[in-house]
Length: 385
Image (tube, rainbow, N blue to C red; front, side, top):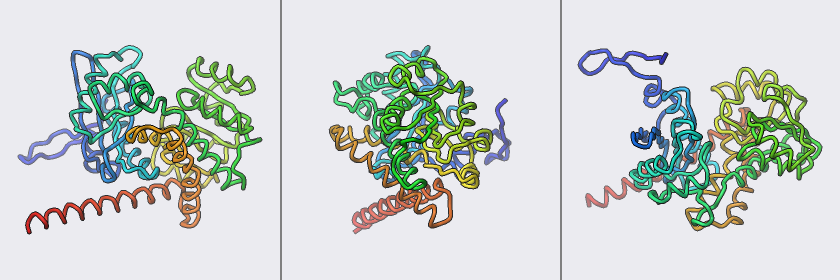
């Protein structure tokens, strides 16, 4: 059953207000500039495009294709992911705002060329306010289809002028964040000899395992898809396998890397975590406000997800300027220094790293918003003169 509250309209009548609208308009998690609900009955498309902020530039964020338990859950996910993209792009030093889209449904059953083209037309109708890319459930070949009707598409194939699989630099950035955490906690930027648990070895996780094994780490993995685990084992026979995430987090670990869906750090996992560092690719890892404090109280160093997993957005953003992998990789390497900066601020201010990262990102967006307002005011004064 959907939780519905009542509000009073202008004429005094009582009307339902969904939790989604309450979040969008009344909570600290809201503040989004625009939310678009998209539907194309012929193809079966139901999608949500959420634009959180364009203070720094057009909103860039991927398109997630997922079978949500409810439409309300899908909208909430779009809102949360879009907000996270604003912070991610700000921390990555990109002249881009934050947005995200979700397509509702099982991609294995629903995805078709007609649906992707219909979705692309909706994105195009925003005139560049939102730039899309890949996310969970969407791939390079999907972006190639969408790009046929929407010029504001990144993450396309190299054959179509794109950057290819953004998971390559997503994993690289997470690895740099992990190295920074190791430097901060243990005094050396290496995972050699450390035990790292990776939950989710799909699009990003299996690349992360490559980096960890090359660095000399002892790696333990788990994934709900057996084929994903088998792919890792074929490349790295020495990797160990846990039966589930619940089993993985209880193993003796130095580092835990959540690389699947969000909410991985919650009231169930945090109390049993053995790792001293959490650094992974998943978005929105903190299940609710306060989890960052729980981690800090347990002496667990948390590398904020939107900071360390920004390599992918750095890769697709570079596509907007004519993609150059070396240029994008060099910028993604800076995640190491950014992560160290956040840890230093957190330590100096006596706050969790997640709070420190938020403050830095919010300051950058506020400065950009103020500068934009000043330009608008100057334009109006000039027009009046």
